[in-house]
Length: 168
Image 1: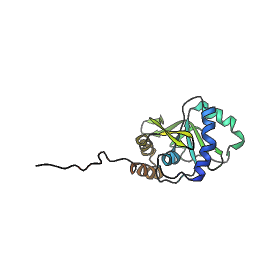
Image 2: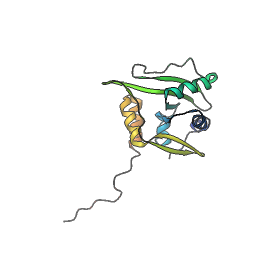
Image 3: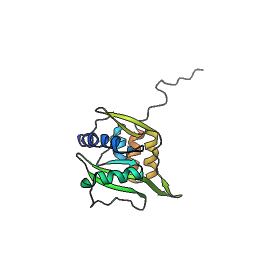
Image 4: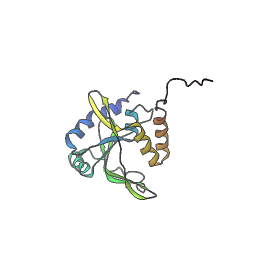
């Protein structure tokens, strides 16, 4: 895995135990932080957490004093969720309860698919598996998402590490 930037380390060290204690349903880290946790060389400016609407509401109540009420999420015509941004040590944290993406078929739920656990200083951080993250970034369709998908594609292992030799 690539080096985890100090700000991401600090944010996840504070955030992950809170999520394990206060979320009743599965959750995961997506976006640039999720890609970085798998080793992609991408810039991380916040931590995006995909979770249920009920868990998002519970965290909004619990973390009310840390809420960044001045922040408005971008791409509201493309994404919708039970959303809030919080000021955490290290990096801002954005929670997205029941995230949906608007596409040709209208509003569709965003599913992380298969999750993997990435170890970080004794913490198990759930993130979508490599191919699932690529799928998510490609579905989001923004320039920054295409860059992240390309960084993840570069991590794929070749299907064969042995040279293929033809015999005559």
